[in-house]
Length: 325
Image 1 (tube, helix red, strand yellow):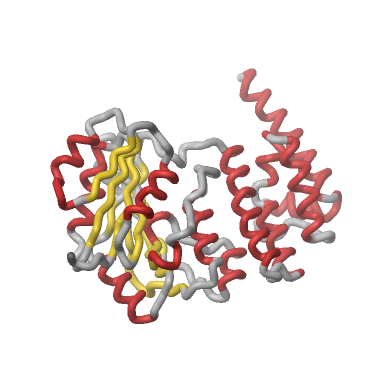
Image 2: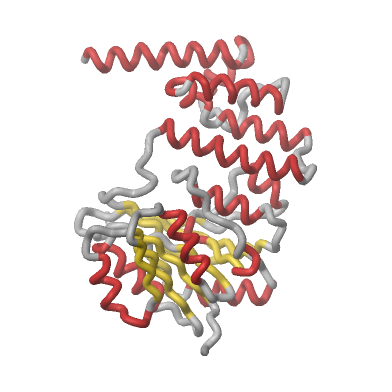
């Protein structure tokens, strides 16, 4: 049996219209020993017929009852035989030649993770790229690792290549569904493996489209997910004795990033987060994660709590005004 170089894991649910393009982008990769694993999470559309068209070119796993995208990815990990793993959402596409280049870099540098750049594009209702919406993002530099993560450097789902033996016992978590790729990447990266950034080129196109996506969530849900992942990062650093005073101050700024949202929508989480920020940095004032000069200045003059109370009151007045209009 031919050894498998890369296993591409594609979870899917009711994405028959775009799924074929994702699979085709994998099968076009010029690489020996490619395994494409599609986990159909109990789709109710014609996904089954799409998968049947590919026959033994792919490994199709059909789940009788919906288990969610992250558990579908875990099933893919369990089934994978490749030396490396690549995760791809079923509405996105790999760039031709991307896998071969990532594998070359991983083997040359004995890397556990290769991070690449990625592209984003918006699709219209017909699945065509909307002119002027293409943007490309370079691969982030991940050194020094801990400080890079606390600076917000990471890659989305399809922009990482992972050595299977390095992540085989790491699971995609059920919560949070939003920011799940950030959660996965940070936990994988903080295993202290060798991470290499690809200098040029992008790995895949992250395609935004009118259909439902897991990223279609509220500001509140996004804020909760953000703090959930930061809690994971903080716990790992504390356990390893790597949460220095400087990193605690940076982490406090990162927690603050979503504090204004929590002030508006979640009083209990807001109170916890504000207390925790001052536990991390007793002299905290918002800096790099607060883009409003007025709020930064007011926080220095009045304190963070009073400033955000004014902000919350202003937003409430604005909401009432819009409602009456």
